[in-house]
Amino acid sequence: MNFDVLQADLPAISERWRSVGVVHLVHSCVEPEEFAAIKAIADQFEEISFAVGLHPLDAQKWRDNSADQIESLARSDRRVVAIGEMGLDFYKADNQEQQKQVFWTQLEIAHRLDKPVIIHCRDAAPVMREEISAFRQQVGKIRGVMHCWTGNPEETQWFLDLGFYISFSGIVTFKNSKTVQAAAQIVPSDRILIETDCPFLSPNPHRGKPCEPSFVFHVAETVARLRGYPVETLAEQTTHNARHLFQLPS
Image: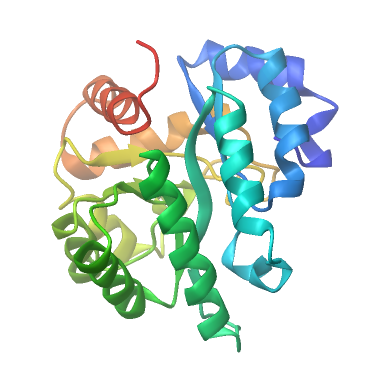
């Protein structure tokens, strides 16, 4: 919500998310320089928690002091509930080794602070699996969520087996997203989350418009239909799961 396309309308946007029953939000972060703006938004709305981290497509921005900066910011505010978003994106990248180094360092920060990670993974699931498995063996357990998930059921199971939550965005509502829809059907009820990734990936019926938090209701409707039970049941499950993963207030 720190994007300009939403900033000017935040009071109305907040009314809309409350009107559809959204009770808490976790605002992701793609680079530490966003922290002040995101914190200012959280100051306006008590139901917002947030994260701090560096997105893999910004890995080239990593500096010698970046790890200290992220850890310091994470310690600076009790509303920081996660490290991220972070991860691997090999869709167009030619800096895979750099991304892996930045990813690993942020895993270390999260492990040290005992915070979950918000993971971005695009065209990189096999390597992501290897990195997380290696980290568990060499450093220790790490928990978190595969954010805005687009993997197939087999890849989904990889990360479930590693103890991760799986979060579905507006992509799951697209007619041609059969693979994502299949994945949404196999995630256990205690490991599923929903999100918007606003201002991107608006779900049907809002395709082409800037996405906003209230649109998560349409994600919930679709995922509940795919899983064969009422949207109220899914809402209860995902609320419970988010509170558990991010240690949110009840």
